[in-house]
Length: 262
Length: 316
Image (cartoon, rainbow over all chains, first blue to last red; front, side, top):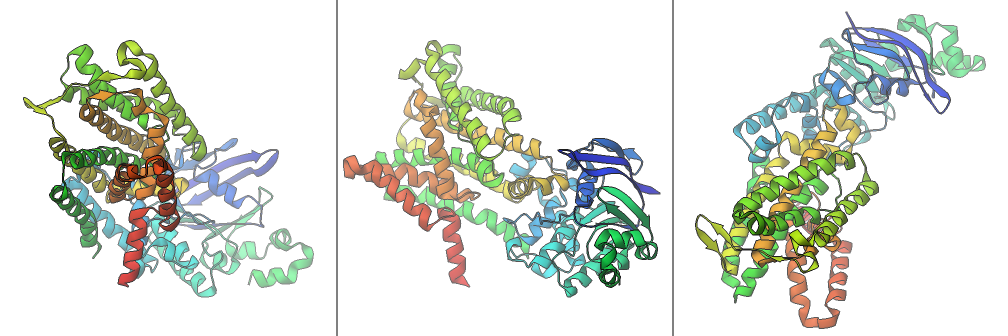
């Protein structure tokens, strides 16, 4: 089943076509990577899909429903979540509380019940906390649950964002450069986490510069260059595509490119 | 583990404050002390509400005295012109403040940071000008008299009675606000404070949450305003003035943003200090300013959060 479908998506900023007629279809349960050189429109595409930007043109469908122009919170309620390339952590809260916010769309109490601390709020807090702890355990952060989020290392914060998004039980999870700035041990951990998420049937859409990670975990790879689709295929097909290597490093950088693509 | 610690975090401060309010009169030498105590609780009530908006949701309001004014004039106008009992006027004032907050909040809460600050400032000034100019209803700059509060056929009078009434109301408001800390709404508000975009991605309806808490903080201020007017037996447009709004914000920041206990401490410092400093006559205001500056320089996160951090640092 096609869980996420984008047709001829386009958006421009002051004359620059950041995303220019991109079409992609993502099967449910796939790990789908979007790669491309810096400035090729990957993050812009993410912002379009997650409702942060409204496209000038094109349509987006989530599980068959047209969701073009819906706000992020409306998409969240339909089971789409994401992480951010530049971290968006709730730094005033503990690690656990950060992930508890991820449960928001499943929480059912109103403000008056919350202020009166109705028994339903207490019950729900316990459920929320349990689910949040489970999400933390999945990314290997359960031991740090009580710590202030601000005390975590960069690599741990990256995983905290994943746990927070996971806690919302998304059908589609967009990961924006989860391994950026991570060392090789942390990257391996991210690799393991992505595989385990996919195993649970969650569709993962990945933007990432670490080619080894992309090639390891992806079912399909979509390559962007200057806001347009360059090619799409399996990791093997993309790896051997001459256009891709050229787009990344220019014709002269082919040696480095070979190394980058492993 | 944390279920217990969350519960402790909520109930321990409540217990401490109940004990504090109940035992403080042992050290009171005259009715004047009760009077100061009542004023502290009245302002602390408004500050608890404003703190929900500022400390939790991270949205500033430089016009909250406007709601103080609506509440204050409700208990003056209701009984005088409509023959309503003061307690009913207090409730009507609260509802009216909520409705006004809804109408004003919808457009202006889309603004952020300094822009929101200026817009709320404008709202506060607007209310204060209306209260001054509509002299037929409000008595103009001279204000108007406010009847005694009558509860269940019993007239509330005397600073000591007001001390207990305002203290009890403050505890109620304190508990309601404190409950929110450990609730879906409270977590959503704190999330909005740190990253609106991340909150939205997780399904938090940011606009509606901001509006809700703005309305609630307005109702807190309104009830405090009604109490203030009933307690003084008099109301003037000054209650809704710009300086009052600033004073409320200063109480929030001084006590500690996001700290429910800080609301009481901030209100206490800014109500008690001017009284204590009157012995310095013309230097009173200057000293007050100096002390506030020193507080903020050395306890930069506000009194309660800074002291709490220092204490937990020692314990380790």
